[in-house]
Length: 303
Image (cartoon, rainbow, N blue to C red):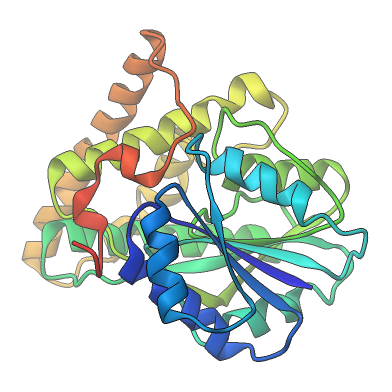
């Protein structure tokens, strides 16, 4: 059984596209697509548009994405190691061969987690669009290297998949795309990066949205120090500098992009400093929906 869990936050049109993308590319009956959303109106909208019996709407109690995933991990639990969860969001959508790519990767019994490749929907003709392309290019490069070498890597929260039978829950105090792969890694499973499974992402287009999203991500990953102190970290300031500092210099195509890149370096440093400062003031990461981060410019169809 393949269970696709789409966590969404009051973006019915975008979520409809996310659901339809999965239903169209995989027509077999051993697929179930569940949308988890705290807004009942989203469920009404989706049920009117989707008549496929493989679709399920799960009204979330509003306690956050990780809380909802824990509930469904237990409700949809299976002892069959060939069964998988595919985890994604309602404000993104995947490429037409994503399910096939993921299923193929899990044919290796050693693989416990599979992560896809984020692709920016933003053009390079704006500063924030260019910044997104730089970030995603660096992420692709690092994940491809770590996966090829059999080293631990954290997954993409936009799209990753896991075997059903291994864990039933995970801590809420950090990002699921980091702690879940670690739990699999501790049990002896490998993490595989599958760039053929693409997920298309709309990125922030304003300073406030960009900063809010990135600071929240950093705080989530910094909480790993307390939850899993022995976990190999791949999303840190040091790793950004080590693996991306010089590589980013190869990406600009013109003088305008060179200028934007020079602005990106201090911006990344500032967001880390801001996140560290907030953590020292006990402004801890709190599990919540994407909408709580007030990143309005990342909306696609429901703006």
